Image 1 (spheres, rainbow, N blue to C red):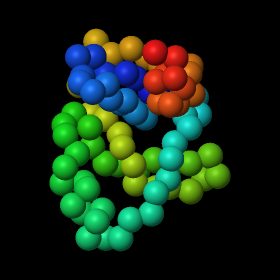
Image 2 (tube, rainbow, N blue to C red):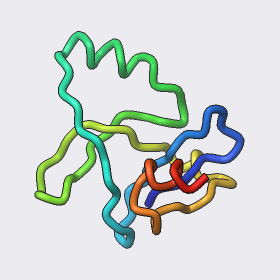
Image 3 (cartoon, helix red, strand yellow):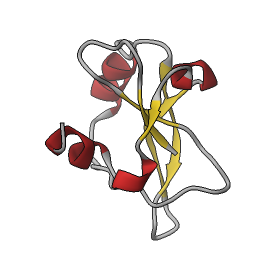
Image 4 (cartoon, rainbow, N blue to C red):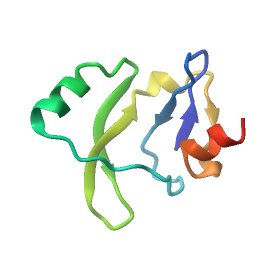
Length: 89
């Protein structure tokens, strides 16, 4: 499920694994190991890097959120992605 985190400036998405959810549009980038490591070091909690399963069955490392990230958050799963949420604001 995809959420817009409450009280987050700038606004941030929170992706949380759920057995019942919907497909979420994501962007996939390729980084070298040193760049990926320095990027991960800057990810602020309650966001995290975890494994995200893509529609084709493959898995990539990507942004996920700890459960506490959805406290007070707006469920925006129905929009299908963060860009759609931002465009509608």
